[in-house]
Length: 264
Image (cartoon, rainbow, N blue to C red; front, side):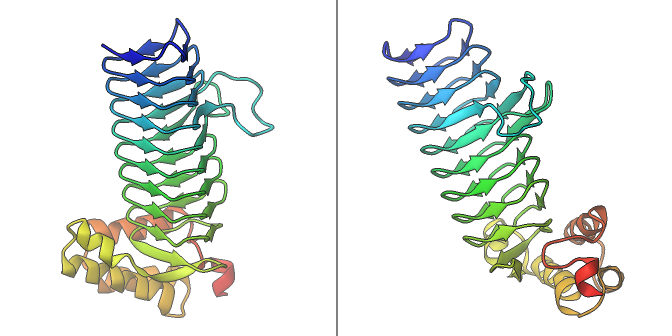
């Protein structure tokens, strides 16, 4: 049995699961699916195209599946897909895709703090923390277990790897490889995200190998190509080493604070 306030508007076509709480003055549009156990606080708007899993909490004033803020969108039907066990705090805005049947996606167990904005077609992984007033532009990717501190700004089409910490106020204008801390403006490498990796159960020898990788990539004063040659010679193959090298190669050596142009 769901608990829906008579002062909320729920479109008759919306699909509402079991044990859902919808407080007064919430707005639930047509073409919306809300899974079991969700809590929708006052003044929340969940608009057409939202596909929401189980046990999510939407705090006051957030807008889910808002139409895209992009001139390329011409009214196509698209979606915001949200997994399970997420917390989405006050006045967060999440835009749906600009592409027909496309989606903006939020994973599971993610915490999105107040006044943050996630634009069209971005993909947010599992167990991600997005701090207050973070802005994520269109078509970005944020890897699992990453943390974006308050007021960080992520430019369009940037990818941030897994287990990354971006310090508060940073402007991410290029891809960020996994397991690092990025800080300052212009953004720069600040070390390995060792504290969070330990909390995540990574072994000390694994963290040491990750640190070796980034000493070659960021601190050896050589080209990205030569740095990867050194990484492969110096660090034994493994999931973490391969994640680093694959990320850099996949992005054609273009990562935050280190590009071919900047090293030549």
